[in-house]
Image (cartoon, rainbow over all chains, first blue to last red; front, side, top):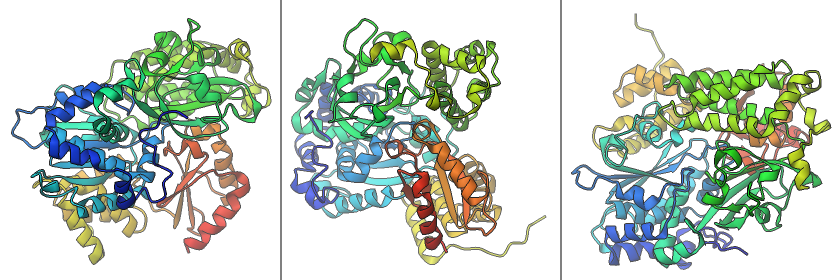
Length: 452
Length: 169
């Protein structure tokens, strides 16, 4: 069994209640931090731990905290990003549903470290049944004296509120999230200024992912240096991976970073292998935005080294032969998958979710969706493939927020690795008119054939 | 020209909740309560946000109606047209598609005799297709009201619809 730090107690009955969570050692980190540490000391431990943002970007959490404007006289805010919307990702939902106090405890120690007296959890509105779960956990924490005025007699005050989103992927981008929390459309802001200086209500603000915040108590309990020993290299600790697609055992798994991809994909402890005894065709390793990998680059890097579940190993080879750990949304595709159709659904998603502020993204995602639709439905032209590459290139890097890049990377990588899938659609338009074309007659590429 | 409306108002318990929500934000930042209140309004006033409902929300928060319209039209959870008693929101994004979402949508269209975006003649079901709902490990799935109905298949769909018909009478 791999090491578990966040989900280690998830199977204990009643762990969603304060009573059981507390009996299992919960809220010890709050006591430790508030009674025996200064806010800066808490931040130092998080820095030493090497914790990297678990929402997708992988930016060091302690460093992000250190950017907070501490000279400002304005109130400071911690906002938890629970707007989990990246296709393939459902880990934060799992954590909040089953062990909500893990997040609340993390919110308290993180708010203390940042000097915030009011904190918000911005959760995607569709998670309607999780609102009462979190609100109950918050009420229990108030009743036990872990929230409210003068927490544990230390003089520290904190209120936490849960805010619903309205169904917009873009609000997972931190400045769009802040706009939305202010009661506006979720249009990302131009940066700088960054939220650490000018965030919620113009005040210094830190926005962190659910899993990042939930990990902070773990770090305080064991110490940053000990935490940093778990994992591999600069990928310290554990990570929640949400596995889905064509596998035998979809679900949320906590892994120690550095676990070989091969073990994660094929071992019965995790995904349990590709379903229906089929061959592997492709993997999207970290949520829909990251580059897709063909079968021959999944368990091994281009250099022939074993590929590991870590920030560095997954990105080994850059975008030419690598990908990213991203949010941990692990989407597996078997030999019958039409890469074009899958990409079309992703591109339709980004077009739907583009906020419309920047023309390269607003128009470009729509163009890519249209071109992919016509290729997939047997009306494509050979030059459409290069047209897609061209449009993707013109979106990338030319927008206020990373949604543009997120829309461009899947397109560029799908064509880089699966050009023959695209060409097949254009050469045999009659064959692809049936939406299940590759289910009946898989297009087995050399890349798939090599590894099985 | 002023439009004549029949006056609408939240129930007393909802009004009390609205007041509690507004207190979550600092003085003068009550506009932050807009999304939570729009959710309450949609639930209380027939499952959608009519212009009258949005004007009412604007009056509660003492903001301009346009500030409500521009927000309501940005977020896909808010229905700006009337919907049936039971709204089926089926996810169609990649991970759900990989596990057969297209078949589910097709089955529902045939079974209910409507296309996506439409409502059945008896006003019972509205069929919507939506983007990723973070339920990829239990795909295909759909959201109905406060709940996710997961691991759907064409085989179990009739039973699901029967149950929904009973609970949404």
